[in-house]
Structures are given as C-alpha cells and as structure tokens.
Image (cartoon, rainbow, N blue to C red; front, side, top):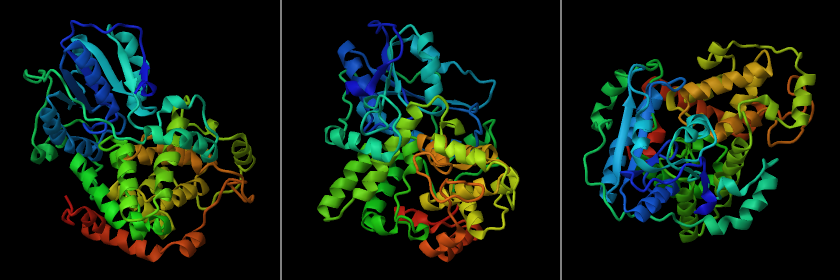
Length: 475
C-alpha cells in the first residue's frame, strides 16, 4: 500500500475529528479501491467511522447531459454498497452556479484526515495540487487507478518498450486482489446535510434541472452504474477475449472490451479487469497477453506520461524528431481543410471518418483502431497541427465518456508522433505515421461498420448494447 500513497501537506492527523473523509474524485467505486481501503485503515486506527464523499458540479468545462447522466447513474448503487459496509456517504450535486461550492471544505473541517484519489489529469490533478495546503488536517492521495503504482516510475518513459520491462519486473507483486474495506466503527448517524439522495428514475429530470449544456444527449449505449461495468466485463470475457488478438482491430466485430468509460470514471478498476481476464484465460486455456498488454503496459504508459508532464495537452511534449518534421511541413497545403464545427458535426467528404465521428456523437466513444484513423485525418484536414490538436481535445471533452483521461491525451498526441517512431516522409505529416482510407479498407470491414453506424443513427437501437443483456432501445 505505501507505494500508492503520497502525503500532499504537512498537517497532522486530528484524532478528535468526527470521521476520516474519503474523497472519490476519480475512482468512484466501493470495490477494489485502494483509496477507500487506506481511509478505512486510518479510521480503524482512530476508532472513527469513514465518510465517502462524491460530488458532481455544473462548473466543470463542457458539463453536459451525457457526462452528468453517466455520473448520476452510478450514485444509487454506490449508496447501497456503502451502506452494506457501514461506511457513510455524502453525494453533493451542485446544480446551479449559485449553489455552494465549498461542501468539501466544510466536510474536511470536521474530519481527522482526508484521503483522495491520486490521478494525473483534469479536476483531481488540479485539486490535489491546490487543496491540501488549505487544510488543517493531513491530506493523502492514493493511486487506485494503476496496477503498478505510478510512484514506482520516477521519470517519464520514452515508449512502451522502455516501461514494459519495468512493469513486468514487479507486476506479480501488485497483480493481487484489493481487500474489501472493513470498518471497526460503522457510520450510525444520518448523512451530512449536503447529501442529495434520489432514485434512478429521477435522473432525467435532475439532469434537466442543472445549469449545464443540454445539447449533448446521453449515450445510446453506455449506462454509468457499477453493475453495468460488471455486466460488460462478463460479456467481454465470454464473447470477446477469445477473439481479441485476431479481431481487436475489426470495429464491427466488437471483440474489444469497451470498458474505457468505466475505467475513466472509476466504476471498475484495471486490477479487477486484469485479474478476471487472467483467470478466464486460465480456465478456458486462452492466451490473454495482447489484451493485458493494452490494459496494463499501454494504459500505464499513458498515466506515466500524464504524471511526469506539466501540460499533457501540449504539442511541446512530442519527441524532438516529431516536432522537427511537423515544423518542416507546417506550410504544406491542406486540401480539403475543414472548420472545427464541420468536424464536430461529421460533415467531411470521407464516409468512414464521418461514421467514426457519429459513433462519438451517439455512443460517446470511438473504437480504438478507427480512433487512430479519425485523429490522423483531423491532422491532414486542419489548417495547422495546433488546430488539429484543439479539435480532437474539444470533441473528447464535450462528447466522449472516456475523455479528459491520461489515455485521451496520450492517444491524441500519438497521432502526432508521441510514443512512436519515424516513418516514410510525406506531405503534412513529414515522417510522422500516416493512415489512409485504402489501408482501412484492406485491413478492416469498413462496409460492415458503415452499416452499423447508419443503423444506429436511424433507429437509436444499438446492437452492441445487447452484449450486456440489456434491451436494444434508445433512452
């Protein structure tokens, strides 16, 4: 556990506090949560209860119906699971900008210690950098996102081939289940006054009442609960893992896990997925190496990049060879050249690219292999590389259920050469890797994907949804 913990201020633990406060900013789950486990350990030492705090605010950039709905869909189940364990729960919904924004600080004032999620992007990273110094109690950040703790990698790694041996040397030590938190003193009082309780069927009305962007509808495919994450994992193990190595780059085959929204919002842990995949592969005599490579090595390379980078959204983070070749080709003609709104509304000449963007608009994700093509074409059809970068980030920030994530920024910058090598030189890209429509047609079943997205757009019924046993119907 100690390798996962960073103490971010010099304030002491306060034994006369009312509880130990766990702040779920990134890992919004009860199971397999090292942060919640750490809070429980401290509380047991002090003979105090644990209070789990989770908030959703209208104030984050691009706050909208899609993101709010996904977040709220997990709350009732979190409340039930915490109650079973004897852990207190405070969920605060800041609906309007006029609502209080200091609820966390009010709760922290009454705590003995604060434990938060250690996460290297978006609000958790910002708050971990600014909040601890304002508190009079100890503030610890715990890494429950990575299997091998981020703290073990003391510098930014150049590529997968440099981080892979470091991960493999210690992986077995950390590839073990996280114990369930067990409290010695149960939470026996009412929830704090800031707590907002609701039923699942009330979510649409609640979201409609928030001061957020109502032009981005909920995903047609993804629901935000822990149970949904567990169902999708089971479906992948039964229907996808045995096909993953051969068909993962065939988007219409649905051989990938599609767990990225649940990993991003912390409804399930990479550790749980890895253990389940390894056990399923052992039981069924499968080889899961390719899947575990993506889940562990590639994902943790992205977290390493975000941890050791001041601004993971900047082209300045590219390797020198990539920056040099893109500068050399900065004035190459771009034809066609699209405006950002045309990209966002899927209004290009390329039917495959438009289908990828429509998948983002409808589902909130793009299948991984086609997302690489999607990004490469934005570079090719944008006035500058900076314009292309900002377009990709804006679309993810607004529409993606797995945006604002270390993998988001790493995968976007990969399109510009991050964690890659030089290739044959050509216009616009220089020696940065290029991807073509002809290549997609040779390697993937483009027609099947186009038919699937067209059907999704026309009917609002998603065949992928049926893999979890849920009805194929729009919201």
